[in-house]
Length: 192
Image (cartoon, rainbow, N blue to C red; front, side):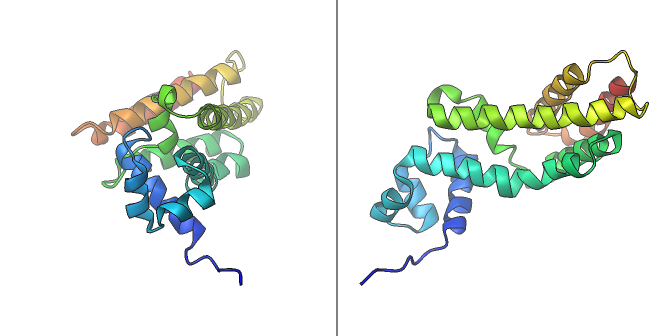
């Protein structure tokens, strides 16, 4: 008789993501993951292979279900208004009390300690985000919202660097209040 799974896979991934968010990949042990997810070690290995497999699937889940909706803003409104809404969404998240940073960005700085497949997923995430921004900025330029002499791809890189900096900066004590001013400076730089 086939035994049915007694757990929700998405719930397991969400709990694993919380562990990776709190401790980072390297400091998160399989024991931590077993305790957090409620799976026993055998089920964990059977379902995900190993810690790398669980982390890689956690990154996929995070990208699709947690950060994906944020990027939908740029897909649904690929123009200046969409860029502004996207940036405001990031800043709103970063200024919230419970903000933990971006799982992808947290591990971008730790690429040396994760699998090559996980590092590739993070690279693809960053490239995709920058491409969505570049397309929206190109449309904004066509609409006359951004000066014609600006390079949309270069602007997208600038915006992503600014966002990553804001996300890290927001984790310092008493800096969240400055993010709206920083956002305003980024938006003005796009139109200058």
